[in-house]
Each structure stands twice: as C-alpha cells, then as structure tokens.
Amino acid sequence: MNPSPDPLPTTPNPAIAASYRVRLAKEQFVFCAAHFITYAGDVCEPLHGHNYRVEVQVEGPLDENHYVLDFIAVRDAVQKITLGLDHRVLLPTLHPQIRVAADQREVTATFEDRRWVFPLSDCVLLPIANTTAELLARWIGERLLESIHACSVEVSVDECDGQVGVCRLSHPR
Ligand SMILES: Nc1nc2c(c(=O)[nH]1)N=C([C@H](O)[C@H](O)COP(=O)(O)OP(=O)(O)OP(=O)(O)O)CN2
Image (cartoon, rainbow, N blue to C red; front, side):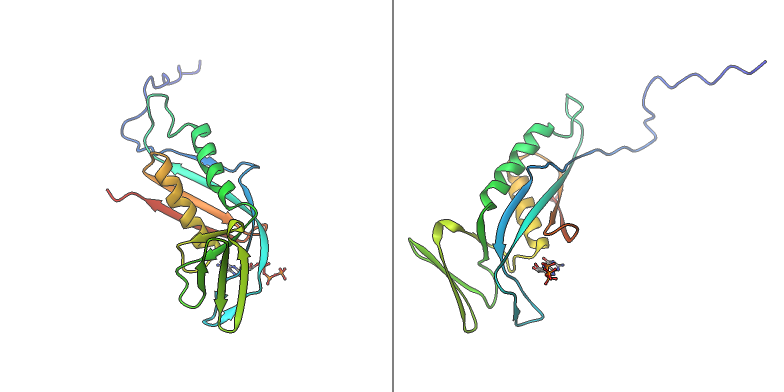
C-alpha cells in the first residue's frame, strides 16, 4: 500500500521570499516618431523615423486586491505618455552639440553646419542628451513613476524590431 501523501500546505511559506511585478506589452504601446542621434563624437544621423514599441514592468508589494498595480491604470498611464510622442519629431534639449531653439511658431535645431526647422506643434523637446532608445526609456520611466505609485519601473523602448533600450528606475529608499 502507498504511504499517504504529505498534506498540502495551507498557507504560503513565509521562509521563501517573494516579489511581484506586472508586465505590460500592449499593441497600442507604439509611437511613430522622427529623430536623429549623434554618436562617435561628431557623427550626426540624418533625420529618420521609427515605429517605437514600449514595454513596461512595474514592481512593488501587493495591495488589498493582491495587485502590484491595476493593469488598467498602468496601461492608461503608459498610453498617455506614448500618445504625447506619437507623430512628433523628438529633439534633445541637453545635447552638447545639437542646439534646439523654439519660438512661438517654430523649432530650429542646429548641428555644426546643418539646420532643421519644424513647426512647434510637430515637436517634442525632451530634456535628454540624445534621443537614444535608452534615454527615451528613461524619460518615459520618469513620467510613468510620476503618474503611478510604484517602487520601481523598467521601461523597454524597441526602436525597430529587436533593437531595445531598457531603463530601470527606482525611488530612493
Ligand atoms: N544602443 C543604441 N544603439 C543605437 C541606437 C540607440 O538608440 N541605442 N540608435 C541608433 C540609431 O538611431 C538608428 O536609428 C538605428 O536604426 P537602424 O535603422 O537599424 O540603423 P541602420 O543605419 O542600420 O539602418 P538600416 O535601415 O537598418 O540600414 C543606432 N544605434
């Protein structure tokens, strides 16, 4: 005769540490934007566009619903951020060599002897040093942390099918 099986535990084991996060990778987390970056010191790309795809992870303790955060609240917060970048030209205002100047109507960006002029309403001026996927992920992560209550977020920005910049941000403890 088989010995009777061990009884199933009736509570989670407090000796085993658990942490939780939610991950959202929604179809609608896409923004189509134009940009150019510099690299290797003084190489400046031509203006071009990407269909950027965003994914987020949010970490924290469980609330009274046993949620880290409501998926719907996170979804709406991310969508609001990505919508603000959609169909825009992304320009870095902290770039050491790209100068970005705006008036009531237009934005002028200059790099060495090159000059781009855009309608103001077509642009988003971002306080970052270069519009790399990594720094866009950080900018989105900071906006997300401002709008949801979470210990930490991780934002991935995929600029074209598998080229992904990732930034993890945590509130100081
Ligand atoms: N770590 C990072 N590397 C690169 C970034 C970045 O944000 N983080 N960005 C770029 C460029 O912005 C560029 O957009 C790369 O895109 P891609 O179109 O793939 O570049 P190609 O010149 O190879 O263009 P093809 O159309 O594929 O010929 C570069 N690196």
